[in-house]
Structure formats: structure tokens, C-alpha cells
Image (cartoon, rainbow, N blue to C red; front, side, top):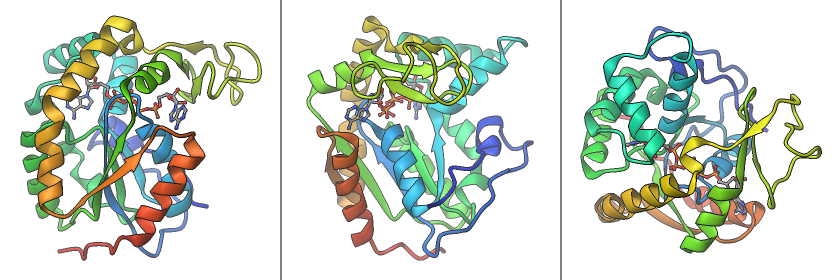
Length: 254
Ligand code: AP5
């Protein structure tokens, strides 16, 4: 069992020192997690890390971390624009997201490997990722694409709750807390993400539908795409994920 560790360098950017510790997996994985909002990428990422190692690098988490940090201090104009787009459920501009990942290139070079969640979302982002990986001498092992019917996705997003303190994730029906509206881990109040409101969910699903096909084609043409049916419960989805990863031959660095 590997530790999910501390992603401070990913969340805070290049001036923060990485605080992840613990054993390095014999085969560090370099994976991209694709799929619509709410399909369960973050849920699977935590399970993958526990069994296979690597760091969970979510671009959405970077924006949410920035939103919390900027409650005290004013955000930069670029970040303020990005956070406003996110709240509405729209994609942040390619330029802002690519710059954010480029600044964190050391996380992609990390000895633990990585699970990139939420990036790339557009073809331009996929091309930019290739350039960043080439510079840090890493190659993708695979792009895992999770899919599920839209009603399942909407039910997952509208029932999701997160702890306002430790950010642990719950679902009102599928993963309820032991005490209503309270985090099992820290007792913090459970809240709904602003972009899980019905209008923002519709916008996010439209944004995904408008940009996903070229990205999927890009990885399909390179033989990197692996399809995973995410309509079952988290353990059933992870059983497929595990089987897919076990069949992969990790790409050699360089
Ligand atoms: P991001 O944070 O990446 O959000 P997302 O892609 O919309 O994905 P989610 O985090 O909502 O869902 P998930 O698939 O991780 O599902 P989860 O495991 O939580 O992005 C947020 C925003 O940031 C974007 O809208 C955009 O504005 C901006 N952004 C980020 N990256 C960007 C980029 N590259 N370019 C431009 N803009 C970018 O599961 C959901 C719920 O379902 C949970 O409650 C969970 O408990 C439950 N659940 C999960 N799996 C199952 C299952 N198998 N069975 C039953 N319940 C399940």
C-alpha cells in the first residue's frame, strides 16, 4: 500500500518543496486519466495510488487550492479569470492551464511517477503536455478513459459532497458519511462544490462533449488509449483499472 502523500509542490507551485515520502514503486507509472466530469476519475486516482504508487496531479485541485488561498489575499488577474470560469463550469483557457502545468514540470519528473487528472482536456493541451514531458524526459504509459451514461454522471455530481476542512470526498447515496453532513475523518462540515450546482453541471458536460473527441483520437492513434466502463461501483471500476494497468508495459524514460 503506497501513501497518497502530500502534494504541496503540485498545489502551491514551483516555490514549494515536495513533501511526499515513502517507498517508490518498482515501476513508477506515468498515466493520464480522461473522462467526463463526475465519472469518478478522482475516486479511481486514490485507489490507483494506494496500489500502484504515483502522485495524484489534478488541475482542478490546483484551482480549488488557489480559490481557498485567495479568500485571504487577492488573486492575480489570470487566476481570478480562471476561478470565475471554473465556478460557471467553463474550461479555463489553454494558456493559463498549460502555464500552470509547465510551472509544475518537476512534479511530472518525480521519481514516484504521476496520475494526471483533468489535463489534458483539449488537443492543444495534449500537444503542450508532450512538449513538457519531452523536456523532463518522461513518456506516458497510457491514457485511461473512463466512460458512463450521462444520467449516472449527473447523479454522481449532484450527490457529491466534500469536507470543507480536509477535502475528503463523499456522496449522499453512494458514499454517505457516518454522521449526516459531517466528515468521518475530521468532523468538518460537508459542502457542495460550486460547480456541482445544476447549471454548472450542464455547462461542464457541454464543455467536455465539445473538446473530448480530438484528445481521445490523439491517444488512440498512439496506441495509448485504454477504455474503462465506469458505470459500476467504485470497486468494480477499480478491478478493471487494475487489470488494465497490470497489462501495461511502462514506457522507458528518455
Ligand atoms: P476537475 O476538478 O478536473 O473536475 P472534473 O473533470 O469536472 O471532474 P470531477 O472532479 O468533478 O469528477 P471526477 O471524475 O474526479 O469524479 P469523482 O471521483 O469526484 O475540474 C474542475 C474545473 O477546473 C473544470 O470545470 C475547469 O473549469 C477547470 N479545469 C481543470 N482542469 C482544466 C483543464 N485542463 N482545462 C481547462 N479547465 C480546467 O466522483 C464524483 C462523485 O461520484 C463522488 O461523490 C464519488 O463519491 C462518486 N463516485 C465516484 N465513482 C463512483 C462509482 N463508481 N460509483 C458510484 N459513485 C461514484
